[in-house]
Image 1 (cartoon, helix red, strand yellow):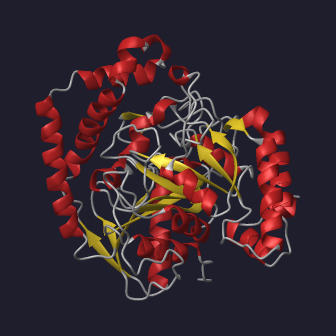
Image 2 (cartoon, helix red, strand yellow):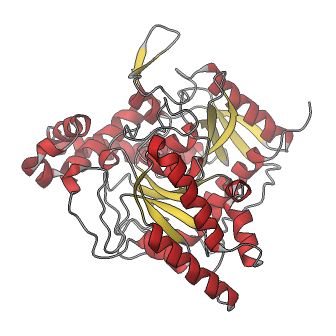
Image 3 (tube, one colour):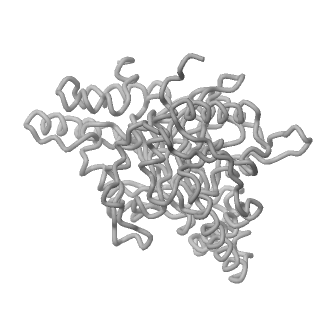
Length: 457
């Protein structure tokens, strides 16, 4: 069983396709692991044990009879509890949604089921995805620390072996933050690449759906299954015809941007050092490092918050009036603050976003990808509220975790986090790769190069 849990999604998939491994064995291994770790970690809202076993039997029969659906067939996967599954609750980890039952599947759910994936259950999130810590869930690598958020349950489930991959959402870093803190790969695709139909929104102009798994290859396989145009999502776009997430790791000649400003301000030295090593690793493989200036850096976070809190307040306008006491204090405060923003403030944020996107487009005319830290610090302790920086300043944990991820949401550009080394406490460090719109395959390509073993020096 332990050997099964060590398999990547791609390895398990290949073994299933070759009929060397049964989906039933994978599901049994995942459920046993969930039973062992859940009492301490609390990653799952619900586990659909009987349904998962039934799906595994059906997958086994289909594959034996030559009805193989592709690389996700028979693979146990978890869903953040924002994605609708017909007949199941979508609680968004909130008392506000008690008693809710989904009438139909989300687009992501349907895509996974078409690919033959086995849905193990729903995972916890920071309430309504409006936070960066997922306080009810613990980090499997150190249960006294946060798994990050908002997709903390999804990351925790994959990190302890309760699923081979999971789907999350990302409005200001909510896939990449927990992936980085739990030592996983997490990907926020280009805005519009993955349909959000049937997914509980937080802020519609910033929300993305995306995968997290153990390797870049695994993330690419999941992305290939769930991406595509969907007329039910107004933001949905058709991927380029040449789009291939099964990217190779060749980066020879690629121009990798290294920021001079913003991304290394108030960043712990072990994190900054990991990015420097990753840059050197890419250069060793033939990439060209190019120092760049991040445009309009002072406006990135104000624009993110101006858009997010206004849109979230609109989404929750009815419930916050009728059921304010059911919200957690932190989320209620943010929603009430959003109600105080004027239409003029929101329009200013939209204008700022348009200007930022234009300037970032110019930035990427000189580089292929941008290499940065994912988060400025590794996983905080559960009781920790702030980070202390060397200049004597303090920053809240949530503000620190969102700061380096949010630019990709404001611009809608693809962003990938890949684990690369550990800090002095043995906690994983994530490095972030950002790319041009719909150049997701190239971002994955660079991520796979970063995963390549380091050459002796």
